[in-house]
Length: 149
Image (cartoon, rainbow, N blue to C red; front, side, top):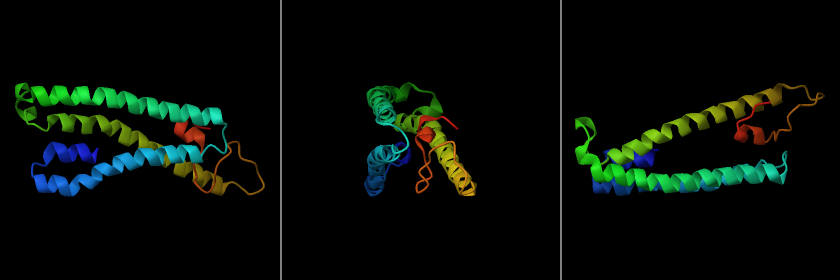
């Protein structure tokens, strides 16, 4: 999201080059997400892990197909847009806005995972939990699948 914002609103070439490492974080993040999903498979079977990784890769492929078309449409026709939207970076600004719901959903998942970890720590040591949770991470596969216990 920040990377698109930089391309949308920064016009100085030196500043863009200086801020370019921020864009690399997005590539590292997708690898880290797959590693997190792979690490949480202790409580679920390989089928669940494969479903999550397949869904993630499917969404990534869909975005890599649709994103360039949207960006090309905005960058080609930006001069015909109404006055506040007729600058060359409008396509990148649109892509940054499209990313806002994903940012909100990931924040929601983070809050849920932390709440789940807090509940596990509050559970008396002698009682059994209904969800098999990896206490060291505070996450379970159901958090990533969008289900709650």
